[in-house]
Image (cartoon, helix red, strand yellow):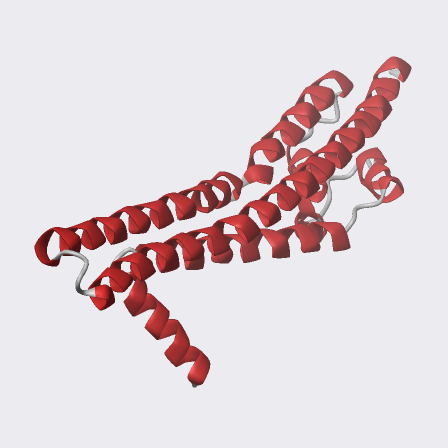
Length: 210
């Protein structure tokens, strides 16, 4: 209860700029949570190369249940499920279809990342806006009452400092987590491209044997 009262006191001290800062923070961490859960799911449900080649080498189209299972195994599984659902069992056409299936997984890898990094960058700017409004209030008090009202002066300065602090507290962890997630996504994309080349080489060998 005391923590909530302390937070509310800080919001009141920081002034109206605190409300967009709260919105930015909640939005950013919501997107981060979604992306972290996605990365965790992709890392946990790895599609083995032997299992993938078993699906590809089968001359029968995979059933609905197998395609659904593959889609639960991240970008590699989704690419393979799309390929298996549209392949024509012609080696040349299959290679083109496989490339298209992998390419359509590249863009979704970065879902939410731009928004996370933009929100993290916006937070200190909003904090700076609060700093400016706080200092404007301070100078306005000085202009009206001089320096004889220290309480009013302290109020403006405190608003400036609280909003600056809040903006940095949102931005710094947001940027750190965002960069960590970006690195994880690059690793996932690298795994996807290795997976693509392995299946493509198998399809190429199949084409040469025809």
